[in-house]
Amino acid sequence: MESNEKKRILSMYQCTGTFTLGNYLGAFKNALRFQEEGYQCAYALADLHAITVRQEPAQLRKYTQDAYAFLLAMGIDLSKTLFFIQSHVPQHAQLAWILNCYTQFGELSRMTQFKDKSAKHADNINAGLFTYPCLMAADILLYQADFVPVGADQKQHVEIARDIAERFNGIYSPTFTVPEPIIPQHGARVMSLQDPTRKMSKSDGNNNGCISVLDDPDTIMRKFKRAITDSEACVRYSDDKPGVKNLMEIYSCITGKSMEEIEGEFAGKGYGDFKPAVAEAVIGELRPIQERFKEILQDKDYLQRCCRENAEKAGSIAQRTVSKAMKKIGFLPMK
Ligand code: ATP
Ligand code: LTN
Image 1: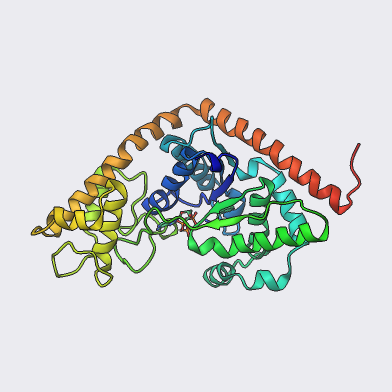
Image 2: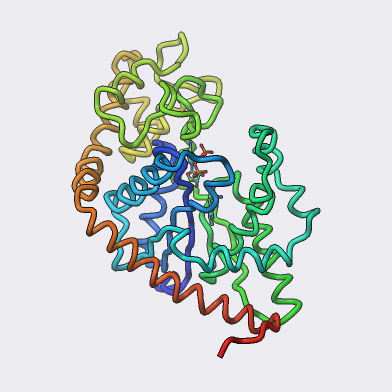
């Protein structure tokens, strides 16, 4: 894996709710893989992005702290990986302002997430929602990231970050690494257990369709037993069986078994056997993480120290990039 050694990966996660099994299988397991494959990884919680939608203060604090502790419990290794909270590193907001001035109104107007979110939150179409991609570009460019793993819905934002970087580099001279999105091949796109045509999403709240990574075993079992399937009662991987397909993908992602192996394992059995088996796999995967999560949360000093040390390290990397950009623009340096 020598060729990966110096390549930089950056990704961030919004802490607007408790993480779901979708976040875990679709994003976090890959984040750990990159860490083990020798990339230089930086991960962060995008709390500045979170406030583009109104947040309840105590909840935002709790979600942020829980999210940080959960990712540590899951195996983010701070001796290899930088892991911080966006609002602890003021250079993100600072570079975001600068990049605002190198981004066109027309470009931002074309972002599908802006169109979707402004339709969903029609009473609060704030300027931050509109300039969200500039902050995300700052997140990425500050760390000179080569690769940015994101879900397909964020690809457009990484592309605008590329355009902004190329534009700035073209006006002045090479300043920012031009990043590439990675849409992970490993890991499932987990669908709602109640409506398998829709993505499992933390903003849907803790309903029966959504498994939270902090759900207790009984809750996980109950939600899987109620999962929508079909009337065929046969564990078969097919696009016209979206409920079963989703459960098979979850099971495969955790056990490493192929779809054929899973079909073989449950041949002649019905959903009454299959659903609890999927639930048990998920419970077994999450249990040790939940135990570590509880331990970490009890040690507030440790948590605070990790957050602070990582924010300081991130800040010194970020400052180098901000200073470089400011010098090129022509800001008078403070001596
Ligand atoms: P929201 O519910 O607020 O839209 P989200 O749950 O989709 O949020 P994000 O914070 O936008 O989560 O995404 C974090 C990462 O988790 C992204 O890389 C995203 O692609 C991934 N992810 C989110 N939901 C799923 C899912 N159901 N299946 C696979 N990956 C997912
Ligand atoms: N917009 C992303 C979260 C995010 C991000 C980033 C992802 C904020 N900054 C930088 C990758 C790189 C989301 O909603 N999932």
